[in-house]
Length: 286
Image (tube, rainbow, N blue to C red; front, side, top):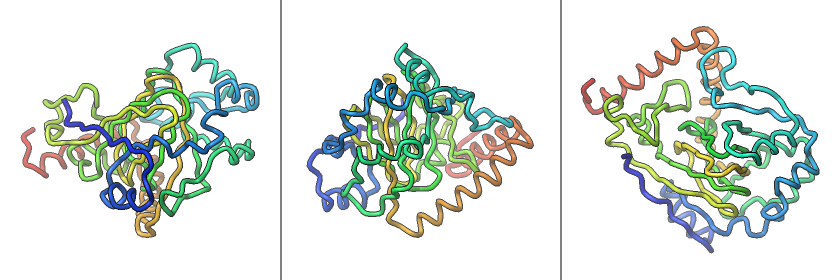
């Protein structure tokens, strides 16, 4: 099994406590009360979205979203929001929506949440929603812009596994991407021996709770139930913002371009580079 420890759960954290104990240490934490003043906490139910915004056409992604080739990171199809929500209600499904900015279509919803005052640097132009069916999952990755992420769970539960950035080699980071393809639930130590040295965190995020994921932290997400969340991003560092812009440019120019040209062969090359890095770091045998 992987070396995973629980994430702290805290209520009543002050800005000063958060800055000293978690932001400075780049350590994840679950706030149990950061959303308590949000109207969205109780208002944004499935029935509310179906009734008020059910006719919106939304992009839906299956588990093949990161499959190599010309459709890499593209939606499977577009459906009315109501239809997708009804799919979620019926039971397990791998269909997800991510980086969905519903506020472009419904700006009035911006009044239903509050920008946290727990730290500075929140990026108000990027409030994204994430929806997923029971049993669906998000492959291990880190966020390309290197912002801190505050994941606010509104409906259903999520399991989140995190690794700090310094574990990137041990978890076989694919070069030119934000991805790792290890199986968090069934780690293959024979194929990926450096995993024995990796360490991270494991937690369940419940409705009404907020998970702080520090900049660059890898995260794997399972939808324990069908549900959804809104993520808010913060970046108080201009240096980190510049690094994030470089990551974005490299991903779209190099990785997406090579995927279109080489397909699965490009993925195999990246996997080989990831294994070589791990061997060279600690002289791990093949």
